[in-house]
Figure 1: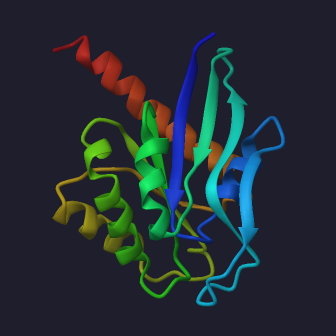
Figure 2 (figure 1 turned 120 degrees about the vertical axis):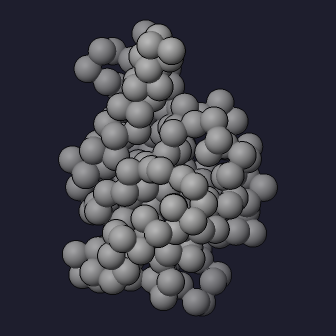
Length: 181
């Protein structure tokens, strides 16, 4: 059995804790505290990390880590990204400028994104259709990045599994693609 590490990141309230809880086989480990940021209507927020586990059909295990969303905890992002096989960035389309939010995480993980694959999940796009996926694509193009962008409901196990499957497919393609060089 092989173990892998996938990191979830994104703004406070984007659904990192919820996504991990939706797919983890164990009760997730969470470091949530009362939210002191009055600009976000949320009772609790992650200040350390979230952790869960998912076993794949092959028997391999995926360790799921979630970062704190607030940029004041960005020093933890680098620590948690160490040895990650891939990165999932969650964005909340109901926020005032979710494309700018995504840009913060693309910049914050710029070194890692040169080495590991990424999938982007856009939450609340069903109730907040703007910006559309094209706006996110424009941001990625401006940074010479190509990552899959998927509308998701992080409360739905199937949606979160789709993000992970998409990420694992990129990893598999890069491994097997290397054999054809």
